[in-house]
Each structure stands twice: as C-alpha cells, then as structure tokens.
Length: 183
Image 1: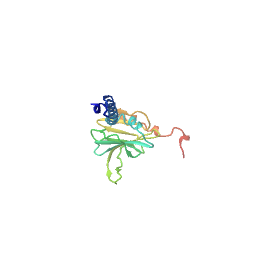
Image 2 (image 1 turned 90 degrees about the horizontal axis):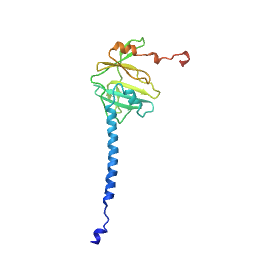
Image 3 (image 1 turned 120 degrees about the vertical axis):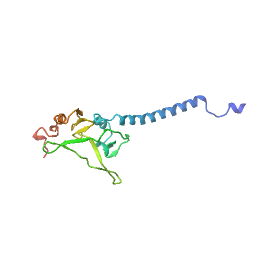
Image 4 (image 1 turned 90 degrees about the vertical axis):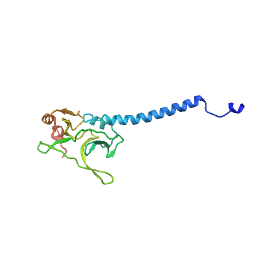
C-alpha cells in the first residue's frame, strides 16, 4: 500500500496544465495557417494594392498570374511568398496601356523564368514598388474595366472602356515643373 502512495506519477493538475499548453500551441499554429488562407481568399482586383502594401518587401511586391490565368501568386523581391495561390479572374483579362502617342494598346507580359530555366507564360502582372508607385494600366476583366493609377490612389472600376480611358490619367507620370526634370 505504501509503494502505491509514494509512486512518482503525474497529478491531475499537472496533466491539465500540459493539455492546456498543447491546446494553446495548436491553436496559435492553426490560426496562423487560417489567416494565410483568409488573406489569399480576400484578394481581388480592387484590393490588390492594399494587399501588396501589407507584404514585407524591400524593393518590389508583385502579383503574377500564370497562363491560363487560373492561379496567381504573390512575389516579394522576386521570391514567391507563403500566401497560397489564389484566383483573380474567371476569364483571362485584357490589359491596356497608352503608347507613345497616347493611344490605348493591348499589353502583353514577358514570361517568367524559374530557377530551373523553365519558361512560364504570364497573363497578368501587377507590381508595387517601395516608393509607392505601381503598375499603371487599364484591365478588362469579367465585363468590367479597372483603372490602376501609378501611385497609391485607389483602383477605379467602370462599365466601359471609353469611361476607363477618360479616368486613365497619365499626367501623374510627368513632372509638373521644369525643375522636376533631372537631366
């Protein structure tokens, strides 16, 4: 009888503390994974700039969508982030940019090359730079037109290309005074 009372076992209180600690660690780990899933599910064309500005990057943060435009990824300083792949488009988008003469022309993106030198075609690419500037164009997607300003202004949405072209202000790209030119 004496050996049973003096045995070195765990008390109910000690077991309860261990279970609580394991539960806390598990809860923190699962919630951090869940937050990454929520972030990737919440990304849309209208929230892209905000999403990229919340990333940790030194020079450039990008959203790159690979052909056939079903999977998009976030890259920070040319390294793929931990945010899981997401979808921005139901159908491949058309991207327009003004040419030298101020006319809209459809834009094609250069392919992405992996570390193994495999070529991956890109259907959409949006970049945000550390100085607050970003890609500047009009995107036609899902029967709407999205105007991406060059700086941290909000992305606008219109119903027609002509309305989008009116809102597509390229004067923000040019210096306003002669002293702004650095020649």
